[in-house]
Image (cartoon, helix red, strand yellow):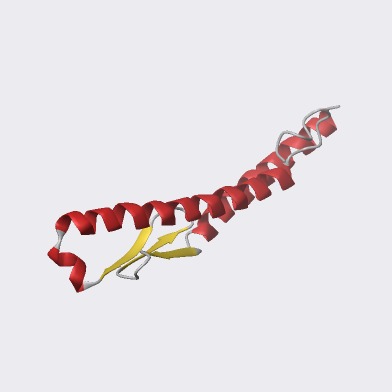
Length: 108
């Protein structure tokens, strides 16, 4: 009984390390998004940190339009980055979960 518990604890610790390693790796996975007309381009890491923003000069003439472009484009990029982040972390967590009867359908 205690051997199983120790084995499970070891597996959980190993999974925790894999999750941390995955989070670090996601800092190097980038999502590029741009406005429909290509006037605004943003790059985010899969951990949802903004890496770059490129703004066409024509957008600098209209503050309200630029704000709208930023909101729309950043939200699309954040959505994509979140999807990648959640999928990667869920895969690592699911892989490391101990086989507990009745819990096999929780993470699918």
